[in-house]
Amino acid sequence: MMNLSETLIIFLKDDGISLQTLDGQSAGYWPNGNLRIFAGQNRQAFPARIVLHDERSDISSNEK
Image 1 (cartoon, helix red, strand yellow):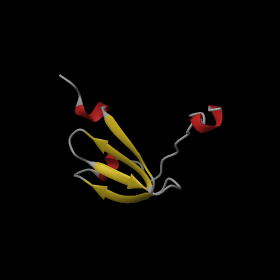
Image 2 (cartoon, helix red, strand yellow; image 1 turned 60 degrees about the horizontal axis):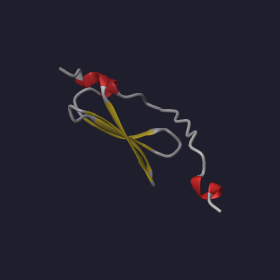
Image 3 (cartoon, one colour; image 1 turned 45 degrees about the vertical axis):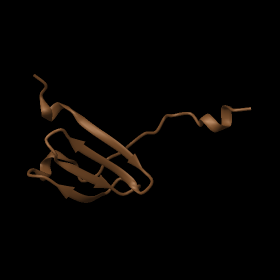
């Protein structure tokens, strides 16, 4: 059986980032990483601020 607390779904959106657990708790973050909205039972499940390092290469610059 999967431990729900060990699974985190990350949504990258135009207006920020959302994190969600499989049990339905979620948090939305502004593009600067600050928490903007929380839904769920335990606010401690999510940090007040996140840091995301995007290390993807720009695919469009590789196209010729």
